[in-house]
Length: 353
Image (cartoon, rainbow, N blue to C red; front, top):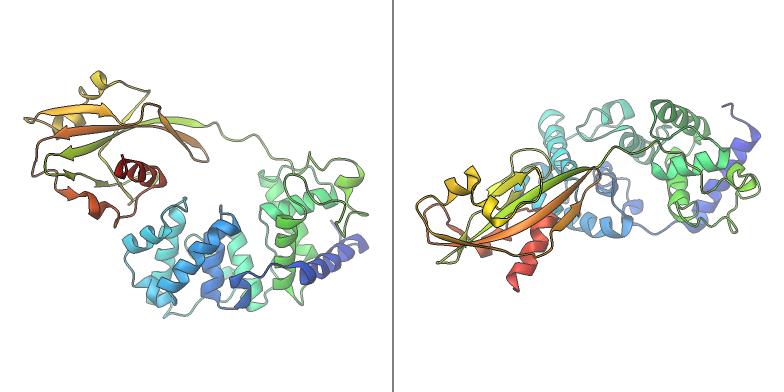
């Protein structure tokens, strides 16, 4: 798409709207690449109101990239607990160590170097490069896709290879080369607060007289997204061990979702099972060989924990048993370890049970 008068008007009005309406967010009061990076990683897949508290926690506990680099992964994951998509935290920590140890603590200053960091993609590299270093590289996130597809009436699916390329090229053509950081923040803010997914504020929108989607009554149709991947159903059976001397057992997860978070011993099955089937599983037999047990289901209704591409159908089986050298973990100590929201919710219920 060529850079037209329509495009110029779009850019100018967008920035004007932003300067009058932008929210007072903490990461907008700094040009520190470390803090901007931190905010962008936290805000991936996370609403601003939820991410704000985590941003403050991280800045307080790790005020510099050196502090983050020298923290343990467990400390980082514990602070991240409840935010989900834990690979973001692991990548954040990995890249902090890389910058401190391999780059002498010097934060990368160009898009091409930023994108080499683990966990930093096109969007995050563009945001940091434009806001902190005035490099004219356009951000494209969900908000930007929505604004551009509606304003210019583009039906190309935003999650297709063609769409990703097309929208990036258009965003790059539209960017204000003199003030790229302000332009990028303006289009993201506009998408978040005016051109919302549901019930956008079209009546008070400063671009409403030139928006294709509005004039053609296509607001609800755009942006177009290709059909999502099929949801995978998984069945988790957690063994909540409760010994006579009030001890239990937790394990560090070594693969997949929640990597390096802690959980109770897990038996994953292909469908829901009952207690008679549970006690026949090899892991159950191995854990409780030669000691007596009584097993009771804690949650009468299966807990369904929904993630982006999978639903975890969970049962928590409380196993009352004898004291054992294999079960020595105190209940108080669990809270010091990073756990998934699923486990944390259970602990909060079990504690008061």
